[in-house]
Length: 146
Image (cartoon, rainbow, N blue to C red):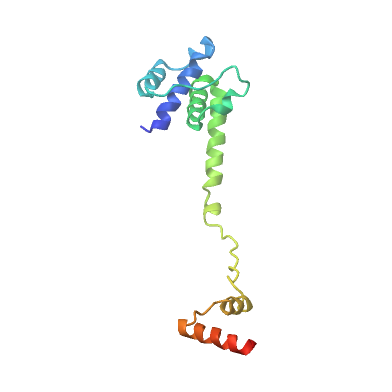
């Protein structure tokens, strides 16, 4: 199992320890045992329950496990059916035949450089002169100035 989920299990158990006993009793003992058996032994939960926005400080994997607990153990049967239907509807919309094979408008890529820019760039290229031609020009310029 991935280490991020092992750390998330530590945070979930910490949240369960700070939850009302009435809600904790709705969660399966087997599931809580699973969390205890698979939690990270080296990770310590950093959740500050005194902070109003403590939910925003938990790991995304912790949020996933909490959502799973909510869906499977804490909601009523009617709400569970409603959530399952909503999940199925979203899945069908995302992977519907029309959406998968719908042709998207593809635009032609713009040219990387216009011809004028290419010519200007080529004219900026410096050609190295030979060392003896540099010396010849230097000497020539010395005599031409006087």
